[in-house]
Length: 424
Image: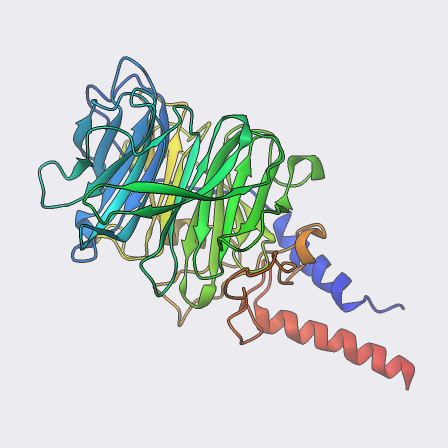
């Protein structure tokens, strides 16, 4: 009997469990939009984690309807706290802590505003009134149809960058400054795209990568380094016959320690969320959000555009982190809040839960159909100066999509041993 090659064996093992997807998870809470945030299309959400009190964290949501709310703020109990209608319809938003604004470190939020013809700056202050306050009177960067934004800070420095998806699928990088008390942007690089509408972006600062979702094109990656070239490398495309439909939304990063974690994609047409391993970029699996009648959530989540996630503890309700998914089918459109442990434990074996490292079995993503290095492998090199390597030096992502890493290594060892026996 012929012994399978190690990679073939790995692919078979990892693909077997992936075939059981999608899995179902039930939400814990949902946001409760109140006037004037009702009757609007929710376009994006950002999750701000309060470092002093996780229970006082905030969800900041952008709505895109001319006759209603622009920016709404919710607590992690789902309660609507504030609404800012002065900026009009919102197309996209992003936030990042530790931006130097007039010498003080602040949490910066950037919002794509139609009425103000570009990006508007806000700062987050949980003790302030309002909690999310405008910086300046107008936009600091013009372009009324900016469809997606991402913020990043260069590790170990105060250099801040903004990535903005413009009409015509242009993708531009800007360096931000807040030295004079306002926010200014200087263009530093334009990145190549495939011509699709940019619907979502996220920066993995630890690995120096920018992940970009293009409508109908799929998920791609770039070096986030300003000197890292302009080339796009494909991660997954609907044309490959893989997990993504042709209509995707935003992208979020579950940022676990030791560069572990996951990329999460809102798949609007499929009413699902796709999970990709942060290191190998292989597809881990798919989950759907179903009704929870006990919590008064009586409809499945559908047509998701926005997604946010955090690995950090947040209140007694979300001690293992929080996943937030947009429900585009319910009226009014709202956000479902789910403990990350609920999502992770729906998979077999469970996904990584960063608050429980001593019991975490983890994953490295299953099979990716040969894209970006194949099962369990690291992605191919990025363009020049890609930033820190994806592997943290231990040579192991401590995970597999369908069997624990130790078991997989043992099976691979048996396969190698079989080959050696046949040659002896």
